[in-house]
Image (cartoon, rainbow, N blue to C red):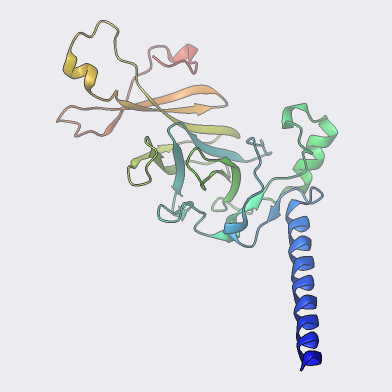
Length: 251
């Protein structure tokens, strides 16, 4: 009897040991810095964050920022991040940026940048999309992602979460050219009220939510939510005061 128990224990120990080795091997493969962009088979395992948006040749990066959390839910007809799971809808589109060895991209040598560009997985056509884990979100257990696409006119849908509450969502959509390679950021923030506003009611009301479209940190377009009945709380594009000298300063 004791001999049978010992044999069973021995087999169990060997099985656990093999599983541990496989798990370690999987982690090493995922964290390998030799493969540049590397597809992650399961979106739930996307824990290798880029930490910064990496500019890629002949590609447009689209990201969102501001509020507690934000998600690009759709680009054209391609679903990106699920509103229900807060993870990529299609794990086949998910890639992980590696190969910078912890250094900011801007501080890599030209040779290192060229090597990273050469190793990156390429977008095959105008409908192709890559989803890259960026950073941990301000909301627990959520991840910020950005998308990479070919530079053509796009329709982009974004969910913003102004409070630490996944049930409170501000939905925003825009159509823009996105024809120049670089990084576009759809950034939300609360508009400042005039300092001489003496109305207690206005002071108690939440400040309007505004959204800027930035191209490589330069302001391109601005939208603000309008509280009046005519606009029914929709985002309305504002005319920028000085289009010839745009900057990313908020009014």
